[in-house]
Image 1 (spheres, rainbow, N blue to C red):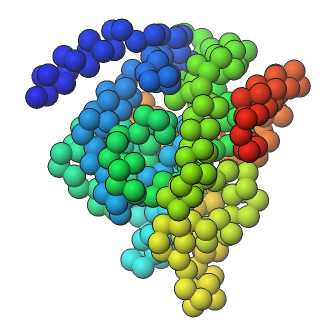
Image 2 (cartoon, rainbow, N blue to C red):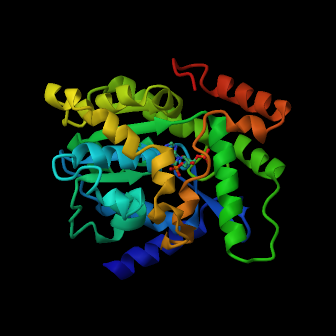
Image 3 (cartoon, rainbow, N blue to C red):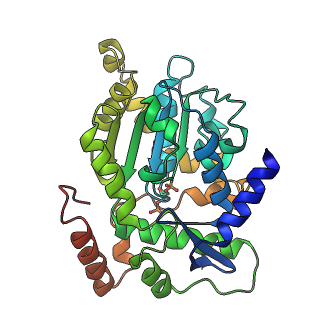
Amino acid sequence: KEEEFEKSFKEMISSLPKSKGWRYSQNLLQYQGFWLHPSHLKGVVSAQQRFQAQPSDIMLCNLPKTGTTWLKSLIFSIITRASFDDSTTPLLSKTPHEVVPFMELDHAHFSTHRDLGLPVLATHVPYSSLPKSILDSGCKIVYICRDPKDSFVSLYYFNVTIQTSQNTRAQPLHINEAFELFCQGASIYGPYWDHVLGYWEASLENPVKILFLQYEDMVDDTVLHVNKLAEFVGHPFSSEEQQQGEPEKIVKMCSFQNLSSLEVNKSEKVVKGEIQNKMYFRKGKVGDWKNHLTPEMAARLDQITLHKLSGSSLQV
Ligand code: A3P
């Protein structure tokens, strides 16, 4: 069976459209309308064929660099708060990515032996390409999006940092070239706007099952959103917990400032692929794009966003 999968997978990828990628020697492949790294594609296809979601699962969905690490740590803290407090939480010694794995990277190949531990998984797969069992099971989905200007800047420097850490002589892609690719939709799991719109429309159709969040709103009032998240995933805070400041404690634990100061998150250890733990934490600010994009670049991206989202009620 595994051999059959390998064979049909090889045939399938040889026919996919290619684009220049953001790191040297790494092209992007277009699968079901979205651009993926070849290293992720196998997990995506495998998950589509084999992943068995359960109604009690919680899926955290988003584009890379829009708040995955933060959302993972918040949801993990919310649903494990009866077992741990801020002096015993596994987040003190593990990265958020170790406590909440990715469906397509960590889990897809083992999905026949389903053992998630906690029923929470993250994925960057677009809504239209999610494994059918996720939609059929009616499990809960939390989606987070972020201003595309900040997402672009975050993604660009993430790639530069990875490439620089690899001691290759190849120059990182110039920001103008990456920007051009981003605007054309050729960014990981992009086009950016199609990804966001897919989940946005699904959340309007099914607000009980899909919670749509924005990074900037969460920064603005994190306590409010932690309450919202807890309620949505079926672990609301009791009035006693409210009085004891439990939501505030979780916000503090998962803040950029706190997480990024923990040894585990400052480490150069590589848990996944080529990414060092510390690379998930850069600035964690809203509006850092102002320090990296020219006014012309910002205006162009805003124009594309306005145009792409014009038929929807969404503003990012
Ligand atoms: P910047 O590069 O703008 O700093 P992801 O987790 O999806 O990979 O996204 C990474 C982005 O989220 C980075 O943005 C990172 O600094 C920021 N981030 C990481 N942890 C965070 C936290 N606890 N709170 C807010 N932002 C966080």
